[in-house]
Length: 420
Image (tube, rainbow, N blue to C red; front, side):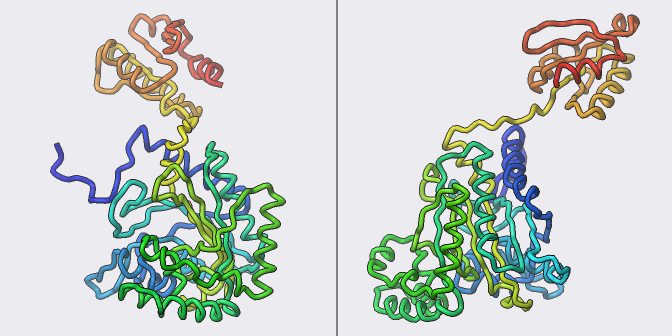
């Protein structure tokens, strides 16, 4: 028994369950790769100010959940709690926005970290796949990203997720709403932390999940009543494009999301089979984030989908993914000469694109065949001295039990034919 365990609120991905996570990442990224999004990877930690400026001082993420530390050299860093700020920082640093080909379309996959109370569906270390379209203000981009996420979930076989949609206005109309909302909130019976939030970003109070707060928010001013004509028209175009694409969504005027940088379009993917942690992903437009972190004006939109949350949603719906076999062929040598010959055969099979494994450790036939069963291989290739003397091996179908001799130099071609 190991002395050490995974830190509280984290998890290890181990076979065979890890195959689900790989399949989910692949399914989410596939529509992006097919739509002009290039892969980007950023460090697991960044300057702490990148997140405090971009994500927002008023958010729980920055004020309570961020893993921040100081290096021996005095640098103040933080483990990344989300992906957008890091991706935008990297794009600006590499001057991708100056290539003349806007929007810059990027996708990423990785681990993120937040110090939260661990519970099912909410971890301190979690995995996301995200996408960002940087440098263009176009309702078609907002709609594109929502459609691609919808496509990814449906390709996995998910059916019981819902898309919530709202508009948060822009720098023209949101200040008027902010003032009206602050006036309403200041009269409520709220704790000091929430009162401080009223002054920094009052929209975040609307996102408070506590029942005692939500009860007092009945009758609060609604943003839809304060949207300027330009924001109304923009939001209507997003809705029209989603309708034309046949993507179902629900208008949710209370949807705020937990990050300060969102403007105009905001959306969330929720799954009712996950209990209180129903969100499986979300995103929105963040037209002012580039300026917040010292860059030029670059209107942008993006989303992040939780890999672990998506796996939980699949389990809630009882969806079994059609995963490729980890091993299709298992080689069992009987004797030293057979070890040498079959090891070369396994190498040849792998080079031909066939998933193959080998009975390591010099086990006897009975033990090796048990390992072949456990591997899930469809076929075993068995050879002893007599087989090799005849220039052949024994090919066994593990499903039917049928065993036939195959010429040694024809093994790869025969297995390719059978597995096609």
